[in-house]
Image (cartoon, helix red, strand yellow):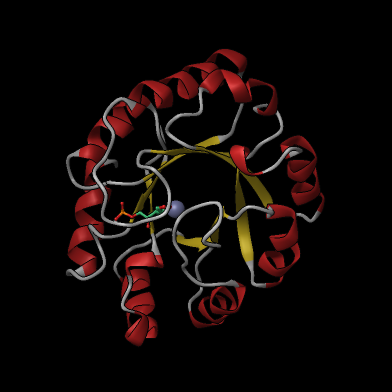
Length: 218
Ligand code: DX5
Ligand code: ZN
């Protein structure tokens, strides 16, 4: 088993000192940066748009993991590609044509991922799994940083990990929401590979916090 990867979510960064936080995350051992785009419609919150994402891209040399929490993800595909995404994750609840959108992302030469809200089941996305590069399991309701991890989600992570093994598939399994030194352990045991962490790392000693998460999943 490969070491787990840590993806700090810049939603919890200090936006008045974003450059400083980005550099500290990179120096502290971040493997990728998680970029939460929200439109105030799909989720009851606003974050930032592709312009900020592009600034992040030119400031720090890390792969950008885009998490689209928007009502019309098709409209954001081009701007998010131009902003330098390496991986684009789309909520299956956000579009009528998730299969088509995943195909369109892949044609652009970047990785494509699906995201599941806590109330969305493994069974509803089985047909997409041979196509995707990434599955992102939400372990909180999307929209805000700093929420409490939902322990029942580890069962869903395990379903994806078991299916991947049984079917010989290669998608990565990412978790997002309420990740800290303790919750990361149960997600790792269930089979996750990429761990998003926002409020646990930003606003603290980034190198120390990222280091403690990495140690838990090495
Ligand atoms: C929530 C976002 C998360 C958020 C995680 O909707 O998708 O990426 O930043 O924040 P924490 O780690 O604080 O739960
Ligand atoms: Zn996210």
